[in-house]
Length: 202
Image 1 (tube, helix red, strand yellow):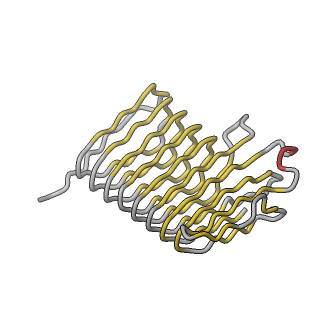
Image 2: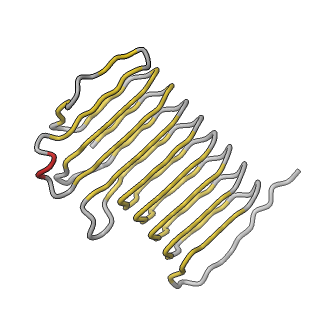
């Protein structure tokens, strides 16, 4: 029982759609420009590095997903039982979901010409940690839900727009920067986990 690794070299041009589908073998995409990337595998990791694309769809089971230095207007990531790690990205919409694993997001910026970032992160058994590494003046709107775990929001100037709910199904927090509507650049974060901790740092 051996896993096979395939290496596909692509010329340095802008592609339309790149589709990579495998079973039990790792997908690594480096330094490509395309309008759309679709990567599907099982039991093997997916890694994108130095990739620019309008739309990115990644799906795997039982293995981690790793994005580093990626520019994508719309990014969708779905893995069954593993870590999702996202670093140094520019995006407008990022959706990431995992069942049993952490979601780690670090250093997120807007794509060129865009004024908003939307992050939608869902885990079942795992922490969600976001460090925006954001030096700019941006307005934040945050929704955070966890059943068994704490929520820590380290974003200056947040006001809790709804009372912090401690219910039988966990904690639900809604908060936004004061005068949120008046900011030109906006960040919307929706984070949800059942058994895990949520931390969001500006």
